[in-house]
Image: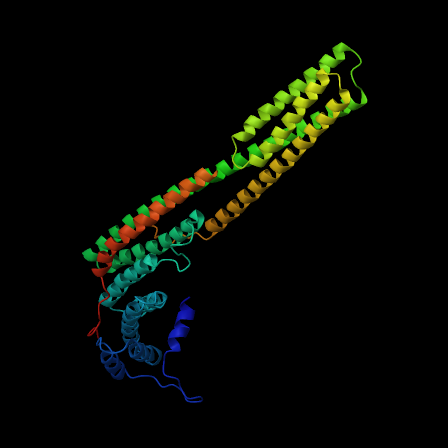
Length: 393
């Protein structure tokens, strides 16, 4: 990132004629050039061009640090309309801290670095729009990204105290940002818990659907077996006829129990219709048995078996679809975990549709809370605008 940003900064310098070697800039000229572009009346483009020239040509490390610092001020101002400039401002502030021997300048650079990271954390994702449905996993990923950036902000403010122990503003900002980190961690934890519950409910739903599909398959096979038995070996005595009717009645009760279990699940209307069709065929088969019409009984039993088989196939499709959805959710969660980073310094503190609706409601509440708190944080940002360095040499 640093090399890329530096490359973009170097491109801002006045182009050199091919074959002409760029000469170094004398310190007194560098001082004059920096002072020349400090007034706010100077356009940002001119400020960036002059300061970049000083950075590229001046060999005095302290003057280059001052140029980097004032370049960061310009970039921070531009970032109000173009948040991508924050990354360049952060690079400039880090360069200031590395090059300068002045504790005063380094303290200011670190303080403003904390603000730059804070503003970067406050920058909303460019992909999100109010019209888009809330994706809890995507929201968690974005919150984790913001959490990482807030930790960098707290670390920058904390590093000011390594230079200036009496900097009360930096100390207060450390606590402010740490409080936001804690709130953000609580929000992430709540969403992750809800997502985990959703995954568990999805897993249970898939298992229930699979169990129902297996049960319907067994009923269909048993019904077909009875149909074959009736057609090939009709009862020859009253005792065998009663036994045949008892078996069919028992199978009809099993079908009724299966139907009740399936009714408790969502989206099973077509399956319930097939089971109802099977039950009606079973009733007709029993009536035919009582009338001694074995041929009709066998045909109705086969009709019942066919309807149960179709119901089982539809339920199996639902179970397979739920399994695929669960696997996709699991993959998304793993990707989110891989993207998580830990940039906090060592001394800092560290389903069913109904369930899905509950998660969306929680996500909406968190978004509303963020909007309310964002206005309050604007006041905080206003208390720590980057300051000019006019005579630090």
